[in-house]
Length: 443
Image 1 (cartoon, rainbow, N blue to C red):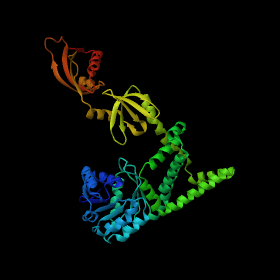
Image 2: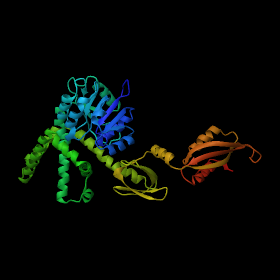
Image 3: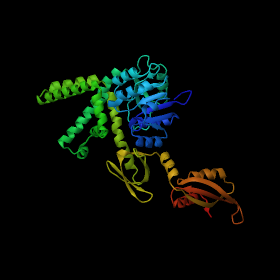
Image 4: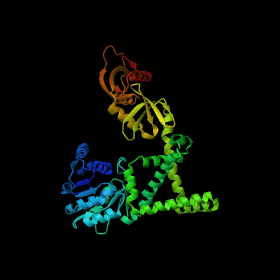
């Protein structure tokens, strides 16, 4: 974040969820971070882990802050702003990151001192994303409320390749009543319906098309998260009430068309909706890409049976390296170097590239070291021989440690001794066979 001095940032409620994620990311920018929470014990643990400051006193935490970020539950946002905002120092900026904007925006303006700026904000992602890059952040600047800080925040987000959406708090809430409210409610309703119908989800996947599997994954993603948060999203945005009621009315209307054999009306309704969405080609392309991703890793793993591969668990970040022994539609079985069999869910792992696998092995495997002496023609280039040796498949590092032309060496030849390393025991046999294959004589 471009600045003349090191910025002080306070995150109210920054010990968990998105607030904690923001603290962790901003710490990488060499900013002075303070987080707060009411639970001192857990707060101090998080602060120590992130190497940031901690206090359980919200008022004290903003005393020298340049940027104050409110990251508390939606239902506590306005109350917390009312408590903290009046104590914001001159020249600072107040930001909230809640998914509802109208009421928090009003509270920021009402309770902030006149010499303080406000910039309501809504990051459209959760704390599981690896970085800001490629994410969407919505800014709802208010008239004459962020003359200095808007460009600073905007530039920071642009430098991190964030897609920025600028709108008003009112338009934000109306749009989010569909983007979040309607979508979440629909998915939660489908999950509840499947449960009431007593359908085996696992069994249903055996019958499933890729579209169903993708939809089921998204539903599971929603319903497995914090239900209190999703209740708050439904409850706090007044526009969501309108969207929910409209969805229920339309569902009943369409169901009645089917029950009453109103085929033409149903077809017309569906056609009208398709015309309104007007994104057939784009939607088809995006969904095709999403579906292809579901099968890509499975195909790569099947082609890797009998070969070494590296798999990183996308949540724990643990890396498993081994020979692929078996692949099912949803699992991969690896035999590791210590002869253990590891079973992993394909949906939870990322396949390392060759360079990533090499770097990981280099940093985590104990290397095996060998020396080998071989005869080469006297006019051989030492530089060429070293490059050739480096290109032998199992070799990691190599150095020429001795050159000998004594009586034991036949005329016209020279003995070179190489010191080299490999990942695995026994790789020296492959290296020696390689040298013999190019005409060298092993001493």
